Image 1 (cartoon, rainbow, N blue to C red):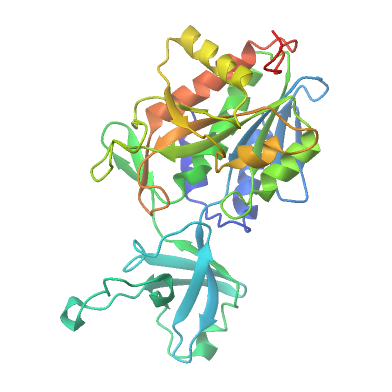
Image 2 (image 1 turned 90 degrees about the vertical axis):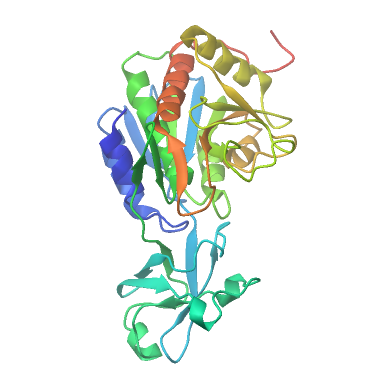
Length: 349
């Protein structure tokens, strides 16, 4: 597992709708071992092995992260923002931020009322957030940014105990990394099927990238590689959630959207590797790229394989590198053993 490439992806800002920089880096890396590279009009990047094969396996990991959109600049130069994806206002106060302005980059901080002046309001909302870039006027800020420009937290990856890392946007640039590493390792095993590793865009806002990918590739089966909620830290009501631990292995989804044949392929591979897996429930929808992939073309059988993650959509998302390595190994083992004659119809043997 190329940790340097992982850290490079995590250090590259990729707010949903502006993933170009991270996609260029992904494309450069994957082109070293893919048989063919493609892009599409959504902004997806696709690395392919065996492009002539009829049986096609699509792996999707989205490259975008949540963030903020500039919605107003007041006369004093303070900046108000809108949500970009499912980001919460509560962790924002006091955090550093980078705004990627149309005319230049600006650093700023989310202002917070001093405790001596009453502190943050108990019921503050997203509309109470503002960014202070040090400007003294609206005109000064407008030299750099326009309404609609994007911003993300300014935060580096932290290495924690037990081979764990923490930072912003691990959801789901880790998935984009995983599908690249799977393609690299599968290429060494001469697969009999077509393998399409896709770094998708826009998952955090509209999942349009996944739709473009599925519609364009028309895969035989697809696996979305994303993150899921760990439930192994204080404050979680264990009676309401499935047990998912970071360091406990990859997480396989079960539910109506999931193809049981594809899931069985994953379980067979896990058994061969003597690997422990965990489960999450997706009774109606998965909330991931799998939902859009499934509904493209004539329909695509899908599965969802996830990385356990603590503190979802906070600037301190935390995962285990061990889980990441095991997810890569599991997917490589499954794909390398496909013959291309497998049926994904749940009513056929």
